Length: 207
Image 1 (cartoon, rainbow, N blue to C red):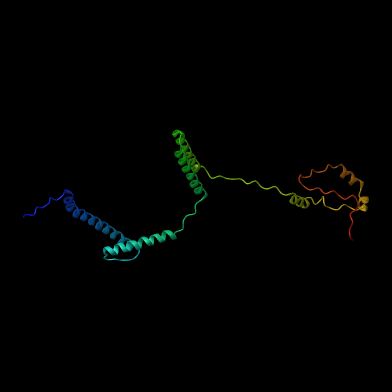
Image 2 (cartoon, rainbow, N blue to C red; image 1 turned 180 degrees about the vertical axis):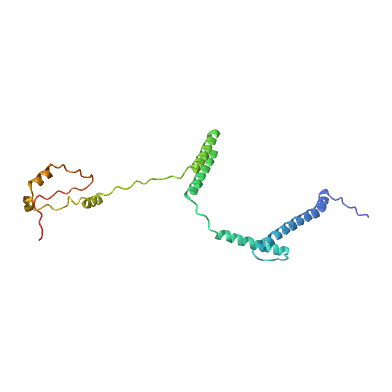
């Protein structure tokens, strides 16, 4: 009894023909990438002072992993620039603008034209702020306290703190001098100075 052969399906025939072809293409891609990676690694290692003549596929992959880890450690140890106040403001402004855009998109019944105008205005405002010159703040000088003004007045107006002459010296003074002193107009006193009244009687002296 003859054995009847079952007809092969088209899917099986396709897989039987295409699988080896796809495998060859995959291996060709792997080999091509490994060759390029080998050239890159040899160049990088020569720049670091290492000379490698021959590398196997496993060596190429291992050296690549080691080199990438080394670069990652360098980037982690690198000093990151400290953000300035302007950078912080720009970041916060952009975050707020994103929240506004998300809110406008989630709320129903919002006019699309209004939302577009609002986001355009926010973008223009940020651009104008970055073009603007830095803000300069003028701090007003603090006014001197009364205690300091009184102390300074005590040193500046020494004539006001001079002791009053005794009675005998008053009697011995000539009338011409008294007439001249009384007729002379008093000089204007600077404002803000402490005025001390002269004593009515003679000043007591310990000697």
